[in-house]
Length: 242
Image 1 (cartoon, rainbow, N blue to C red):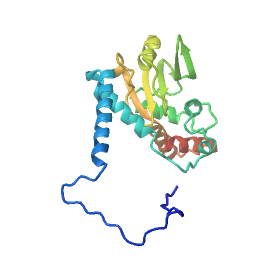
Image 2: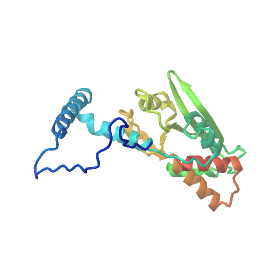
Image 3: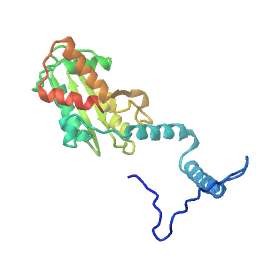
Image 4: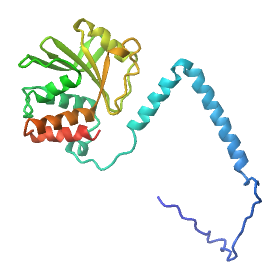
C-alpha cells in the first residue's frame, strides 16, 4: 500500500522550503537513541541464543535456521494443478504421489524406470524384475516412515520434508526402528540438507531433493522415450518447482 503524506486541512501548508543542515560528524536527532535501543535488543537476543544453544551446536543450529529461511522464501505464480488446489506443499499428498510414481504397476507409464534411476542415484544395485512393495506412512512404535520401498531384499526408508521441521530424534528413531532391515535411509527435502536429528545415525543418511527426483523422471522419460501420463507430468512439474 502506498503511503502518501497529506497536509492536514486544518493547517495550511507552508510554501517556504525547509532546509536542514548538519555539519560533518553531527548526529541526526533521534538516531543515537535508536541505535542504543537496537544495541540493547541485540545484546538480549545474543544472551538468549547463548543460553539456549550449547556452544558446540551453534554452527549447526545457525545452518538449520538458514535452511528454514531459504525454504520459505517468497514464491508466487503457481503453474500446476496441485498449486492451484493449494496442495503443492502438502507432505502427505506429495509422498503419496511419489510412491505412486515409483510403483512399477502405477498408471503413470514410467514402468520401473524411475524406481531404478533412484536406486542408481543411491548407489544401490538394480535387480531386474525384483518384486517391489511400497508403503506410505508405515508405523513402528511412535514413529512413522513417510515411504518405505522394498525391492527384493533391499529396503529404502524415505523421510520427506517440505516446510515442516523435524520431530525430536526423528532421524535416529527411524534408523533404530527399521534397523533390522539394514535400510538405506534417505532424507528428501527442498534444500538437500542433512537431518539435524541424526545425532547417532548421521553417516547413514543420504540426501536428495524433490528437484532431483523430477530431474531423474525427466531424464528417464527422454532416454527411454517414454510417454508419461498427464497426471505423472503434472506431478513431476510440481515437485520440480519445489
